[in-house]
Image (cartoon, rainbow, N blue to C red; front, side, top):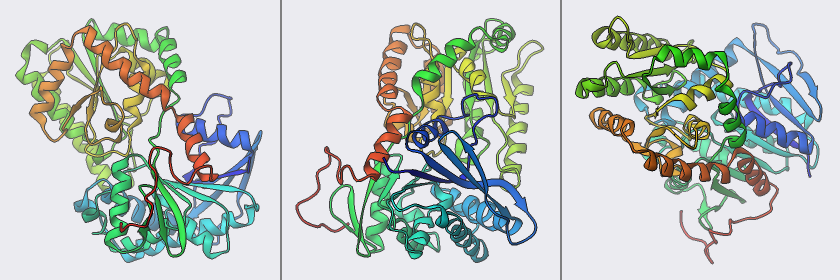
Length: 474
């Protein structure tokens, strides 16, 4: 196998204690890198005030090398906080009202991608396969091509690709679309995302479509496919089983005092629908007063991008909202909402998922949402909980046995919470079995192997999606 190079904005370094990495994506990519021998390049997380930035920090762990680069204050302000998280993120999550486009930030975004290309270029060997991740680094392949790189390069977008009318509202949409045609494989979470991308190409007359997955643009051919990301299913199930014997699990059981647990776990972000979820939970308790003092919502919401004003304001809003509900409905011995504003370790989360009767996974828009998959994997097969899932999450395209809701419909979601709590055991088990089958068939290692197989050129078109016999318009 050719050596693999992974490039991402941040790099999850292996634990010094030898414990597993925090997330399934890191586990899968590190496994692929270890098998092939490989390199993972990205931002170190360090910010230097002086220019130029110093040399790469090189670390080695077994068969994997890590190449870490610092960024300047200006880089972080323009590339990361600016264009990536105040333009691309809101637009891809259908929040045009929150996008703050500025030419200075746009210039910084492309400049930092050029910088990443210059850092990576001396490390590339002739037969290396390069896999670039997420919206921070869309232009990276185009920069590498300009500098003569002929290697196979793939890109995977972890967040949604919006409908054309949304994406084309961004002033530099053509530049980003053309950048993606420099890859050999472009991966999306869902077919809908891929079709949105194809329609953008068509509208802007940037390329031609050769089949469902094959495209050509500027004299190059590439494929664009959905690769729904999974989790390390069996490992997460094992974590959840083991958590039942931990002190935290026992303390939580005791503190619930027989009350049913409803759980929500989200990074603090406006795309996650947290305020609508709390409104729905309050409406549920108001319309079904017999459940008061019998259920508790545990909302775990680690801080996110607190340096961006919108996120700082949201943190205050959610905390005040939870406090208002607790003040209005709570009693001396019962708090309706337990709001935790910090992250928990994966074993602790796995145990809490397993304990919960219902999971509220209700983003307004999400590329995939692995919390939904982790909740299913954590369940006790004899008495599984119910996954209440937004139809606007990528996971809804796979987990068809979940109870799907519209998170914008607060009253409808409230009624579904009540139905989920009362769902018969046989129905809960049948829904869980269907979703668990999906998770085992498409785990994170399958996702990784499938993408890398396509990137290696093992198949130009998927067997279930044959190309047209002649070119057709996008």
